[in-house]
Length: 95
Image 1: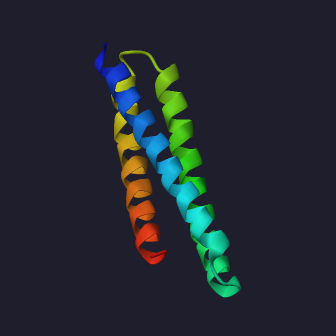
Image 2 (image 1 turned 120 degrees about the vertical axis):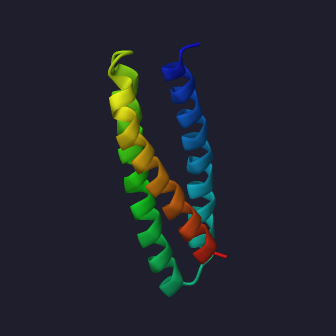
């Protein structure tokens, strides 16, 4: 397995895990009171927007050549870190 393929698999696994976390947050939002629910949905919408961005970058990575993927890695890592921090922050607010 190439480094690119290993990196893609790692990202996809983490993305799947984060998708499950977002679904859990949605379930908590659904159970919250109306005022709180609105705030929760706002955070969930932001997370989903970031998630779409990361998914798009992953597709771009998959379609890149073996030589060019390293150039994309910096941008992907940045978006990845932002989504991870935002998800962690939202999860701590939902407790």
